[in-house]
Image (cartoon, rainbow, N blue to C red; front, side, top):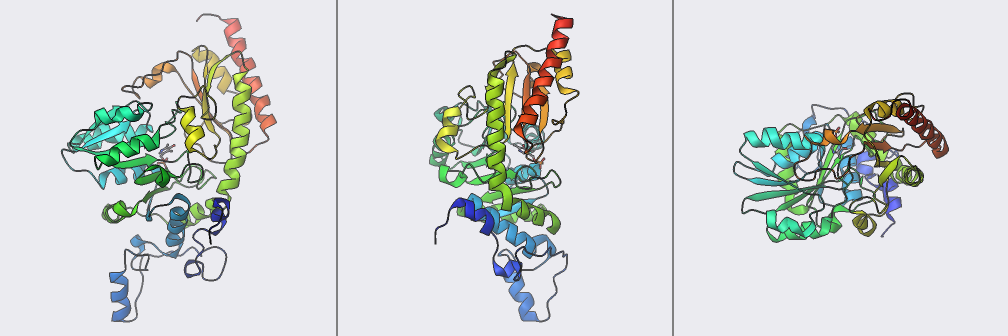
Amino acid sequence: MSESKTTKFVTAGRDKKWTNGVVNPPVQRASTVVFNTVAEKNHATINRAKQTLFYGRRGTNTHFAFQDAMTEIEGGAGCALYPCGTAAISNAILAFVETGDHILMVDTCYEPTRDFCNTIMKKMGIETTYYDPTIGAGIRDLIQPNTKILFLESPGSVTMEVQDVPTMAAIAKEQDVIVMLDNTWGAGVNFSPFDFGVDISIQAATKYIVGHSDVMLGTAVASEKYWDQLREQSYLMGQCVSPDDAYLGLRGIRTLDVRLRQHAENSLTVAKWLEERPEVDHVRHPALETCPGSEFYHRDFTGGNGLFSFVLKTSYPRATTAFLDGMSHFSMGYSWGGFESLVLANEPKSFNSLRTVAHPNFTGTLIRLHIGLEDVNDLLVDLDAAFTRYNEVIQDAPAS
Ligand SMILES: *Cc1c(COP(=O)(O)O)cnc(C)c1O
């Protein structure tokens, strides 16, 4: 029976063999799995990679339920679990490269992804080329005979460029290049990676999957072709998570769809309000035309969430500090995806070390917001007061 995706968030992973007759699977804590007969032990050994209790590192029923749920909502053949999103990214890459290989990495990737390529990959003799997130079909010219992975992240970290994923994935496939996507923003709700040619979809489940800012967790869902290699290599790297964290990831999925819809509604309201502010140069919300690649958002995504950025007309750090200090509902924090609102500011020059080819074409301060589940009117009052503080500094000491 085919069911709506909304229903899937309620049903995914709730097989009786994991839940044991209650709604949620018990948190099954285990290192040792015990067998009473040689036949039982042999059965577990043969099936250890197929969701059979074998040894704690291979997972318990709590993990299996969460893995099934992730595979059901994202697509793909299986889901490997990691202690954080960064571990999911580095281990997914490590599982498929060897010395002499080449990686095509989007220039707007999450900062630790770049650092991983520039340090650990470099040390192993694996070369990385950074490409402009808006390159589209131009990616063809950057593929080398030794290119192993095309890595995408859409929208890009902080500057929010939406990529033409299907066009780029199709070109990579022609040359047998593995397509990996950091799908944290899509969250398994609004972007269906396997429908667009992605081979491995990675998420910082820390963000929207968990959704409550209280667990670090990473996932990588792979297509049939790459699942065995991803699973076994990650296993050899010792990647595993606690059943308590897997449980909280699974619990987050139950409300994921409805949470994201409210985040999206609130964030679009704030984004449109910001568009009218005289201090704002442009808003980088994927649903708005002023966000690079917005046309791909409208073509490929089914909805949004709470994370976007906007650019001020000026870069005036002291005024920005006044904007950020003294907010009531927006805290500063290096994360997003929880129920609460967050804010971070980036001066244009801070991108110098974070971009190789896609240098920002703006000169004002970029502010990234995560719009939470508060009443949006309270958030607008908070932002309005922040702009008042910002303007007071500029009026007191113009042209610093
Ligand atoms: C936070 C984040 C990560 C890393 O996740 P952690 O769980 O913090 O390691 C990776 N990619 C994106 C896009 C992120 O926002």
